[in-house]
Amino acid sequence: MDDDATDNHLRTTGPQAGPHAEDRAEDHAGDRAEDHAVVLGAGMAGLLAARVLAMRFSRVTVLERDELSQGEPVFRPGIPQSRHTHVLWARGVDLIERMLPGTTAKLLAAGAALLESPRDFLWLSPADWFGPVPGARVLLASRELLDRTVRGEVLRNPRVRIRGGATVAGLVAGPDGRTVTGVRLRDGEQLAARLVVDATGRTSKAPAWLTDIGHPAPAVTRYDSHLGYSSRYFEMPDDPARSWQGVYVQGRPDLPRGGVLMPLDGNRWLVTLVGNGEHAPPVREEEFLPFARSLRSPALYDAIRDAIPLSAPTAFRNTANEWRHYERLERWPAGFVVLGDAACRFNPVYGHGMTVAALAAEALAKEIRTLNPEQIAAASRRIQRRTIAVVAVPWQIATSEDMRYAVTEGPPPDRATRILQRYMSRVMAGANTDPAIASRFFGVLSLTRPPGTLLDPVTMVRVLSKPRLPDTPETTAYPPHHGPPAERGARRNA
Image (cartoon, rainbow, N blue to C red):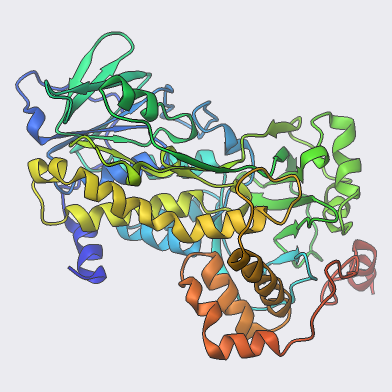
């Protein structure tokens, strides 16, 4: 089946009804486990997996450790990074819209913003300011709003139900240990299923669960650039002269600190300061603005210095890239699949997590499109390998960039990676001002285009014809197309 057929299948398969509450009636005792799938985790990966599995299973139960609010979007501990900047790149927006038509419109109506990056931003790259060049669409919203909206759309399918406050303690295996037949909850309850999908994210216990039923734990590849976040909400000031929607000041090896300002629902700004190693940003309120003032440009500091804070700063430090290589295991139990951050997680500064979750759900849909539940369980090893294949490009982007920093722990870059890093530095510099290079660069960054886009002969000639920049080029405080606040105010009053 081609992509269009898969998209159509995602749009039409399964009964659709009005919104269903998350506290639906418990499973009927007579329901058959053979036609039941259990998804662990109600984050983006788990919700999209549930939507896809409802194409082939008559019942899909999502088990979530957190209690889930049915009202206004609220923070929950299971997504600790939700208080920091999130982006949903164009490919993720499109895939979620195909799986759950109308989701984008609901998000925009609730205050999300669909912007063009970098055109709608003041963006200082490691080389220079991006001009008003084309790039890629990006959806910005609070993670709480994203999760509540997607969860509501998934629950429109009556085959799917969610149980909040359910903590999974382990897998239940068949007598020979070769098949997963369900899960065991902390309170002792056992839930039988033909297929179990672990989408519990960074805190996944799948390696221990596998060893408990006689299977080996996977090898792990890890790169840690020791990136730290510190984030704070601000009231969005009214400024008719402001022509940008967000600010991004990137760090680089000689000054590994940066910051992001993005608009959120609720007429708010979310500001996340970032730094590597000893440059990790502070959490103390009195140190937040001074750190923002120390960045390579004063643009972000100028934007927030007189803005009204709506929260104290919040820290996040769990940002390592980590790939658990389940796909390499020679023995794999039928009826079990690991998706999303539970299998491979990235430094969140590159914004790929939610889009990769959507890509994995798309891969899952393609693998199960002609299979019945029994066949899906039997094919779980192949499904594991096919769904993890989608991480190759974002993993390369995240790790090759993180390896530029001396504090990064992990396997050293090989010769091919060093060559790629030098070439990508020239791509970035060219993309600052060349619309053709910018379009290709952001196509790859947003996971809309394959990496080979930047290596075709026409693009390479265009990139290599640009003057070579020094390793630490000097940059102006503001881009030429948008001056500092004083200049904007003068133009407004003229």
